[in-house]
Image (cartoon, rainbow, N blue to C red):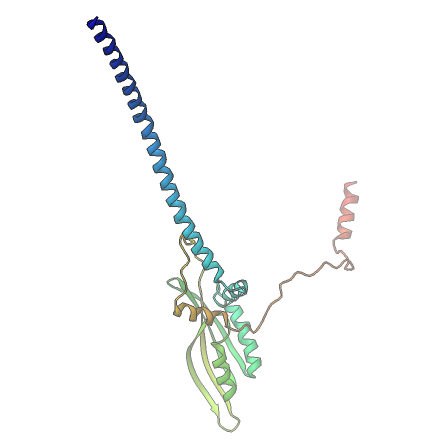
Length: 239
């Protein structure tokens, strides 16, 4: 009897141990997956939080941009162009000479020369007029677009009686191609420094003396088609 009881108890113990082993195995095998899943979820949550902070910073930077940002961008494109703006500068100088009642002669253009990321082209010319008007022209020259700098000046002659003043000079015009590589869009836009703000304000405030209108003209139906007879004759020949 005792032997049968011991045998029965041993069988029960064996079943309990087997159940425990099965539960431990299931817990070990599934627990690792749950742990990996939870770790992945926590990591993704942390990355999302970082992206949200970065996005909020970008939104704050965009909100700080003025409503007339488009106007400022257009002004910057005119003041600091991507291609040689010598012809545009020449038209600006012509308008400025009319404003200050001076005469420009001997205009010569020198092709652009690359100086690192910035290129410089040169316009040489002679200027003639009343002394005060000549000085006003030179002073206003640095206030018009595109970005430029005064070159060497050579005083040729000055008539004391009539007040006619004449000199030869040049102006350096600066431009630079657009960047070929855009900055990383994931980086937060940094605020401009005080020096950069001053440069920015100077560029957008450069005056445009001459404005060209490139709007296409509407077609005029009243103008005779010079090729109409040719088209008709060619159709007759084909028939």
